[in-house]
Structures are given as C-alpha cells and as structure tokens.
Image (tube, rainbow, N blue to C red; front, side, top):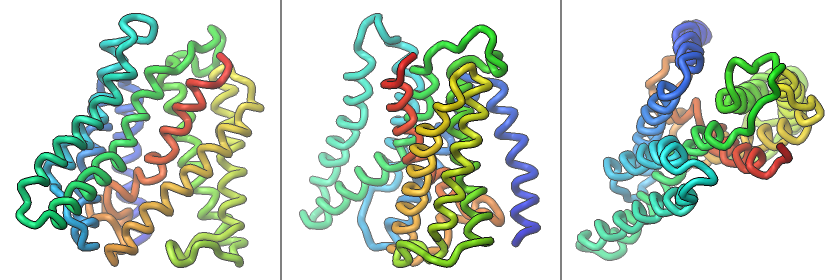
Length: 285
C-alpha cells in the first residue's frame, strides 16, 4: 500500500505542479475534469447508500458549476456589468430546477422527489470546487516586491489554499499517529484524534504564514487563514467520511492506486475553498 501511494504521488504531484505553473486556462480545465470525476464517484456512493439520483445529469451539473466559476468572472469582471454575482447564483438554481423537472417523470413521486434531492446534493456538493477558480478571480493585487509575485494574485492565493490544506492533512496525520489518544466523532471516522486536529491546525497556520509572507502579506494573517482553512479541511474530510459510511465504502473509488478515488483527494478543498474565497473577498486589501 505504501509503495502504491508513493508511486502514485510521484506521478501525480509533477503533473499538478506543471498545470499550476502553466496557469489559466490549464488550471480551470483541470478543475473541471476533477469535478466531473469526483461527482461521478459521489453519485456512485449515493447509489450504494440507496439514495436515488440522476448520476449523468448531476455529474454534468457539477462540472458546469466549476465552468461557471471560471468563466463568469472573466466575462463580467467586478465593476463592469455587475452581472457576475446574479449569473453565478442562477447557474446552480437553474440546474436544480431542471433536476426537479426531470424528477416529475419518475412514476413514483416518492422516488422522483428522492432523485431530485440526491441529484441536487451531489452536484452542489462537488460543485463547491467552483470556489477555487473564483478565488483566483477575486484575489487582490500583490505588492510589487513580493517574493512569489511572479505567480500573480490568482495563483498566489490558490497556492495558499493548496499549501494550507495539504499541510493540515500532513501534520494532522503525523501528530495523530505520534500523539493521538483521545478521539472524536468516531461514529463518522474512527481515526480522527484531538492531537491530530491540533497538530494539523498548527501546521496549516505556519505554512499559510510562510506563503502569505512570500506574497507580500503580513505573516500574522496566517493565523486566521490557517485556522479557517484547517478547520474547513477537517470538516470536508469528515463530511466525505459520513457519505462513505452511509455507503459502507472505504474509499470513493479506485482511480488513484493507494489513495482511493478523486473525491478522496479533493474532499477537504470542497469546504476550504468557499471559506477562503469569502475571506479574500472580505479581508482588507
């Protein structure tokens, strides 16, 4: 298992780094593919948990949400037409309404209603990944002398998200194995410990502070950013664990040997990306 994990990481990490360095639209296209794969796995889990849904439509809707998150801010930038916000709200709203219309054709209204709810949940759940390209679109300008200024504000803040989530996961795993005794929410995920939570948050704060300093921001900003992203990353991981428990599944899929499915790799980002995007939108420039 460890050998598989290391081999998969050795292949995937350079690919992700290359896409990140190439910038948009490569990042946007990659996120759309990731969303489609994660959504398909989500609907497979829902099916195993005996929840009805329209998997193909739900997968397309999840991917469409990420496309909207990438395209709409570019078409209607802030301060011009002012239509970006309403359009971004309209995309999931119309998608959910169309799912409801499709559910009307199911012979049993109870099954139709369940399919409507299941489809809407699966699509919007994975569609939260749309906040990653939105984060890049709303990122404030960087100081001219920033160490990581060559990345630009969009990729700079995306790096904050990635680094904080990955550091939380890594430090939580290490501290949990070394010092973990007291566990929490064992009915959802039996391996989560308070020591892992504390270590993960500390790691996320330190790494976020370092990246933010490189972007020309105050390293003290790493405290709220690291705490917010770390807590949301943990919540996202637990939310997927709850879905897998309901489906009696260990992993969301077998796409990545040793790592499970795509949803297993992005579950933390689904909750962390919206919160960091909100922070960037509201934080002082």
